[in-house]
Every structure is written in C-alpha cells, then in structure tokens.
Image (cartoon, rainbow, N blue to C red; front, side, top):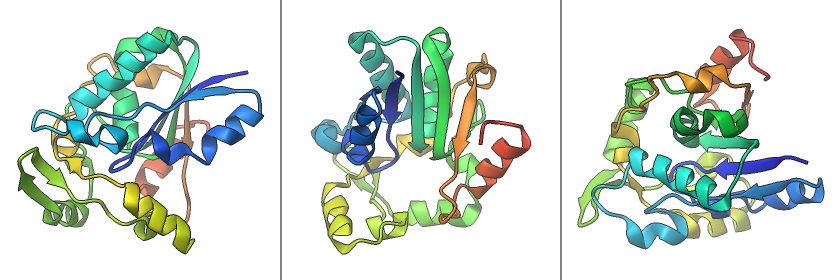
Length: 208
C-alpha cells in the first residue's frame, strides 16, 4: 500500500482528482488531495499575496496535519513547481516525486521563465487586475484535452482564476532536494505543452 499526496494544477483544486482517487483506493492505496489557497473550494481566500510561496506552504501544512510520511508526492502541470519546492522541506519524508504532465522547474526561475514566449504572451493576455490582485482567467476544459461535453461543462463550472504569483514568483530550491529523490514523469502524449519537460526527464533516465 502507498500513500499518495496529489497536488493539482492551475485553475483547479483538489476536486480535479475525482476520477483518480477511487481507482487508487480500490487498489488499496490511500490518497489526499489538498487545495491551494485561492482556488477551488478555497477560492474565497484569493488575495494579492497568494502565489507559489503560499501554495507550497499549503502542501507543507497539509502533510504536517495529516501526519504523513513515506508518501508519493504527485504534481500535475503547475503542481510540478509546488512539489519541487515542497521537497526542499520534506525530502526525508517523501518516497517518490511524480510529475504528471508537469513543469520541471529550475531554482531561481519563474514558470514564465521556462515557458515559450508565445505561451507567456497568451497567459499575459488572460491576466487582469482585480480587488484580489492580478489573476489569470482559466483556459476551458476543452483546451485541456477533455472531450466529453458533460465533463467539459462540469469542469468549466469549477475552474477558478489563478493568482499571477504562481507564475511570477521564482521557484526556490537551493538544495536541489527534488533531484536527489526518486522521480517519475508521466507525459499525456496527446497534449504538447509539456513535451520539452517530458523529453528532458526521459533523456536524464527518469522512470518514464
């Protein structure tokens, strides 16, 4: 039996794993699905100071209060940045890191620094100033590869604005702890955005 901590991507929340958690539990595993501040059921907490740094603290606090150890930490998309920085603090308690169609961040760089210029322009075009700070409007579920119309409607109704700080705050990994842990990469091959990170993981000999 394994313990999975599932860290979601941009615009989402712990709800995004609703099809995954029953499968893991049927296989005898346990899993938890923290939601970051300002997203999902915590979207009412969105504020100007919310960003990557706070989302890392969200997961650290979740692990602390759930009293978890020897767990597998999974990050989807933006969640790859979150789990990489979490590993700086909890490397001794993590069994494996799994990057699910996710960023593999570099110390001191923002996610915008690691995205193609065209993609950054697209994200900036969706960014606006609000009373809760600068936020990025969500991309629809259809753009995430979802094809079922009912699922698209459901997911679109649950997506939240993303605080811009998730992409403008640098990832802090001075000890490079994530690189010293067992790592797996899962690439959703029908989607192109993360192909560069997937290729890097494969070339570096990750479990792929």
